[in-house]
Image (cartoon, rainbow, N blue to C red; front, side, top):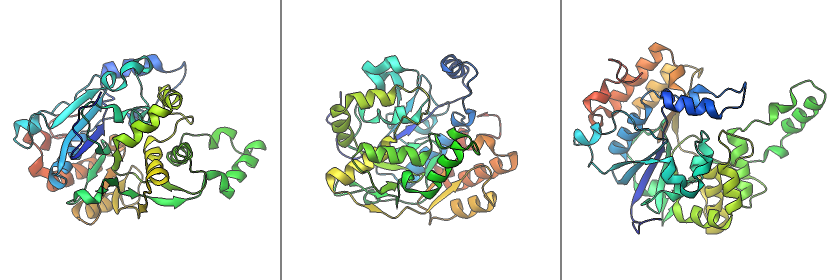
Length: 340
């Protein structure tokens, strides 16, 4: 399945354009009657272009960028090569059908955790790669050893207690049983619960590492060995078309396999720019964070829910930060209707 290209570090970006009519048709065909899906989870406001530009500027050692999509392609992707910012084969688009292969019967999928569990199957993917959501970006100059040291990923996170150890968990169960709160309110497929589940799949039943919203360095061989040995678990994971509490975080699983099997340790969480609608002093935080080169990474969630003023601010900040690494067409994103 894989070529023998194991040198260097690749970047993998998961991307979807939720405004695409064909994507919307697939989504609604797969939804159960009366069910709804969060549109912001699939919305696109050109974030991927900022992500790519940040890699080109601040992580120039990256060997190749892979974009994982479902029968889509970012509209202005080829502009990077046309502008001479990268070689024509530097950015590769891989469809879900190629990624899932013999498991294509579970497609289409709208669950990021299903897709993340299959990234190691990318044909030609380097042994060492960094996984990005399309709303992540690199905020300052990086060195390879800030992602991998002696061939092992640098694990960043905080040591935390399992949810079942927390007082609030027991309180919620009691209040749910008394109908004071909805019993299902603690049955959501949250970010932390999926990471705890991933740790358990790797054999960690006590305190675990909770990783933040930032790029994650991973090793292909570690995941390949695990999933090859646990085909039933993989099949169950990818069988969900939408995010579900029955899914684990593949990133957390990989992190804890590094800890349990390969002696990996974790470092303090990186300083990062993290913003989403409703964040306090959003404009000020974005200006200070993106304008500085102290935070290592950034994540701006749900840009489609920003008001026009904040969205304009984000785009001005991004152009100021990475303008020299954006083709002219992309620098105009949002100004002339280039991207809805």
